[in-house]
Length: 234
Image 1 (tube, one colour):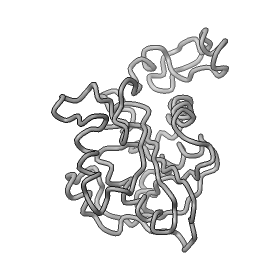
Image 2 (tube, one colour):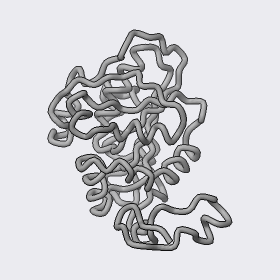
Image 3 (tube, rainbow, N blue to C red):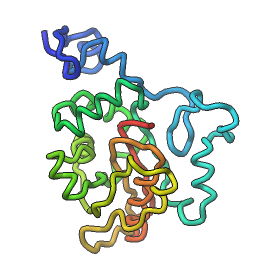
Image 4 (spheres, helix red, strand yellow):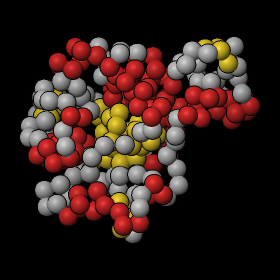
């Protein structure tokens, strides 16, 4: 028996799936595991949003309306190649992320490890350079750890080549204000990324502005392309 990492209730950690298919025991009880809404079905080819959750007027062939707007913006249209996410931002996930990020429960990251690795292998090449979205020093001091770096370490050997300037929390801004934000990221030091295919790692994709700000810095340093993998798609 083990204790679920989310609800702490006891459960049998060995299931038929873990025994015959996946090898590692699950860190979650069945109820919590089922409450995590995994992204599946037909997705926006750019951002990975489940299209079945959108009204038809917000779907343009294989893309959502948000991504159509990004593609029509002359400044941002080529900044991000693609994004894929693991879970949707339902009420259950919202509470988990609050516990994980803002109450400092670092161990909760293990709850997502298997699904994160599975999505990574499904959509991306293991030859890509893994780069976590950084926190500002102020945010890092508040939380005690960078959740994006923790996720990135599940996937390989991340390169912490970006640094972040302390600004108002992105979650408090409108979509327009997020896009207009300037000087969000910079390179830790000057380096030539010529020919590099980069995979940015972050906890949540909301408007896509955070990812694209980081992507533009990497592209300006010579990266060939920038994609992203996030735990959650809002």
